Length: 247
Ligand SMILES: NC(=O)c1ccc[n+]([C@@H]2O[C@H](COP(=O)([O-])OP(=O)(O)OC[C@H]3O[C@@H](n4cnc5c(N)ncnc54)[C@H](O)[C@@H]3O)[C@@H](O)[C@H]2O)c1
Image 1 (cartoon, rainbow, N blue to C red):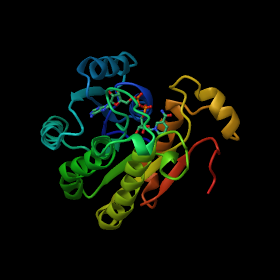
Image 2: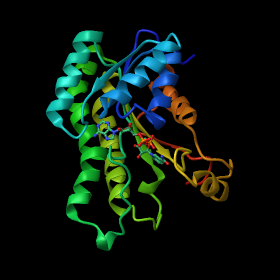
Image 3: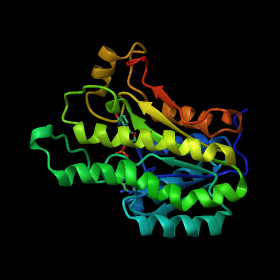
Image 4: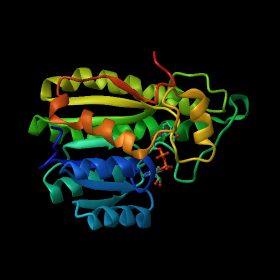
């Protein structure tokens, strides 16, 4: 079950963190994976690391906030690999790192940058890739989202949470247009993940499975939503959060 032999998966922002875990998991199930990242050295190192495991991995450098760069990258990949069957939009935290900002101190420019990466990048990539998926009558879109879209974090995440919520609205509506073509569009809502300092302490207080989430947890959930077996799951948001938020 859940084998992906013959499928090509593009994962944005996969040079490290959750995206790398997703790429590793899909590749171990037989997919050819393409690691996208903003940073060339990071993307290449990630692809080499997967290749050293005997997996099939390529990399593609592009800034996911630039529409033309996304179209150029996807056109090249489709030509090189014969298609993109699975697209995982994982890049959601800016290349320069987090910027917590209390709402009253935040600027419209900051709001825009969160929207560019979390909503518009996903929409640009879908416009670039979906025509090819429609031709093949098969495809999987998975957006990595966050419980910040549906909680009162109080941590200065208003613009981030708003952008993530907008991406969920997009995914739900897109699923309604794509299901008839054998293409599904779903999202994961992640809780506290283990790649930042203090995350274990936070997760022990908030998650019933009392640990922070790992790239492997994310990879396994993306694998399910990308699989042939999940063809009847469409327009859904799957919480992957250790039980910290259950409704
Ligand atoms: N870490 C968490 O606790 C957490 C919690 C909930 C949701 N998430 C979500 O999980 C996803 C992955 O987060 P992470 O913690 O693994 O991030 P990360 O910062 O560890 O890795 C993200 C990667 O994306 C790349 N990237 C950033 N901007 C890019 C761009 N414009 N174009 C191409 N690549 C770009 C970065 O270079 C980096 O390699 C994000 O969507 C994030 O919102 C994370």
